[in-house]
Image (tube, rainbow, N blue to C red):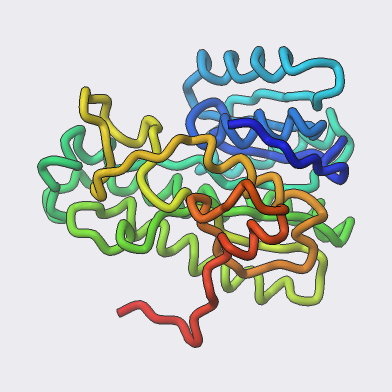
Length: 282
């Protein structure tokens, strides 16, 4: 999937993409670099994918942005602070954060999508790890960038989420509920930043994606029978990181509803979910 629209405001802008070595994060990182942005990608252990993404970024050409690849555990506060410090030292400023790093149901069971694991059957340490990375990792990285954002009175926080049905689907705990928490945090944080030019938004594919969150199989697909390409995240991520999204905060964007044939602002409007009249959990 190639990007046809150009975002001049992204040139020399610095974006941190956690979990940027593979899957959704890799696609968003490469799309940003192709637009001239400087991107910091992190992963906790997958050195090979991180290095490959770096090589692919460098192969985009002289007009592309730069890339800094770091090993970091987003659930570790010191690691999060180090990512921000190194990003600032190399690029001078930080303009956006995409909280993409996360762990899915494979940590609970490699057969979760065919043989659901009941919540009481889940391993305690695996449960804690998913919750710690998905929820606390999002919080810690967001906390780490906030001094930079507040100092410049501008910034973007984009939290990667999942479909509504996944949040409450039986056999998808703790992954689904962890994303529910992230979306609640996003709405609350956006309110707390109302008087600033710092925005917080949610972006999700809109269905299962062809990433490592799903076990490999000859018939790999999500619970809805579909499988979206990770590149579906490119266009909305670019728009959300650019000046095109100025003033848009506390909103939820579904990538599969993004119509790339439309001008970006129209495509964003089509992908933006209508705001609920009031919070509704059950």
